[in-house]
Image (cartoon, rainbow, N blue to C red; front, side, top):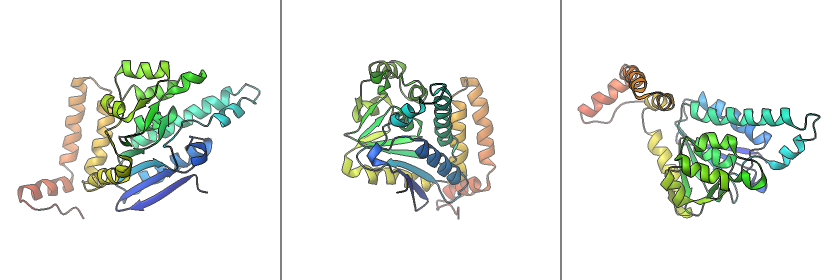
Amino acid sequence: MTILERNDAASVTTLTLNAPDRLNALSDAMLAALHHELDVIADDTTVRAVIIRGAGKAFCAGHDLKEMQAGRQAEDGGAAYFKDLFDRCAAMMQRIQTLPQPVIAQVHGIATAAGCQLVATCDLAIASDDTRFGVNGVNIGLFCSTPMVALTRNIPRKAAFEMLTTGRFINAREAQEVGLINRSVHSDALGRETAELAQAIAGKLPSAVKIGKAAFYEQVQMTTAQAYAYAGNVMVQNMLDAQTDEGITAFLEKRDPDWA
């Protein structure tokens, strides 16, 4: 069985976490497969949007606790393994946001701990209305410090802190209200809604989306004045793209742009 399945259709790549017996845990193998495939996709100009989903009854239950416990058998009690694991996970998460193409999480069942981190990391997220989200490591004595990084960059601080310190799960409605997901839909409509969002993105000029995604993550770390200066330069670069010229010309001439 392939631990990560890839399907390509109509300029959209779907990556399916395929370890349903482990609730698609981010094992060493899963992290490696995800990072590798993201690197491949980054150089694939035929891909304009990416969907990440989970097989079976859950999206992703976070790190593989059995693997983590096995790491304790090392002479250092697992310190080197744990540091390497969290570094590898952080690198994979950051790869999602440096990817030229927008990445959409298609979420169902549960998204817990590093699985919730994955949802928060993706550029967009749509969930079935019966999904539960949690950074619940505190319930077993492990504060979700690395998931906290993505979570606190998505939702209000007090909401994040409550989730982190109580281990309380939130439902899809709450997740939408605090901004963790874009919207929730009935489970029967989840695949269709996600595909429609991916196709809406795939229909846009790839070079504009690429430059815009990179600028989005750069400017959010800046002061307002710095962000305007930076974004202005980005728009100049975008305007000088010949395909942007074609897009604007086509709009003014009331025709579809020729971006072939």
